[in-house]
Image: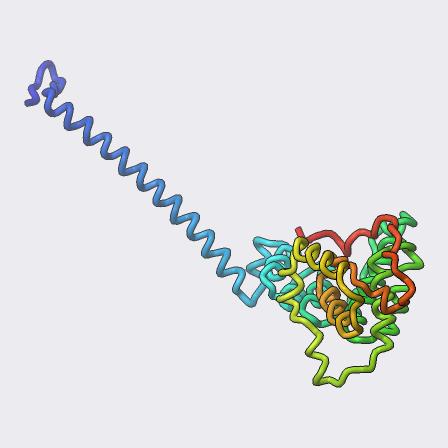
Length: 274
């Protein structure tokens, strides 16, 4: 019971305990309210990002992500044509077109790729950049089964970067494939593998296992060489799988040695997306 003494309220012990409990309950409710607000805010941001990513108008996405970040978002999800539409980097536009099996468009893009000032000022980087662009164009041409022109591009790449093993192997393979009879249009699908199945699902361990099994087997037939070659070309040029085929047996039966070790390869086409 509260009594009045000298103008001040005197609170009984029971009322004091009740006031303390009420104060604590208020603080607990306030803390729960803040956690609820924080959770709803985070959920709202996630939903907002998801909504932006699915909007056809990129002006909303441009508020949050750069063009290359948007391109990477689509590329990592296998939406290569969308990635090609939003990428700012010319090299990654070409890479996306290549992954989408738009090989002619990819080759044209690489043929018009820009050179940085650092490339022009450094002769070694000039050769490296030029060799990589020629190599990527050769891959695109080989995918279109234009083997003679692909061979020319590989040879040009090797003039700029002598001893580049991947280019040497690919050159030998297109020279073999160029001698094979041209397949009818309805037969071409038997060799070409879907990019989604090969490009990103064949990891390095699988590549090493396949390399070991092939190196111990019998000389490969022309059909087997072509199938492996098309699988190899389906990989991204930036992440080219260097499988060591027994192609040299078909090129020259008297040649049994593996290609000699070479100097370092040129850098991959452009940097990885941000």
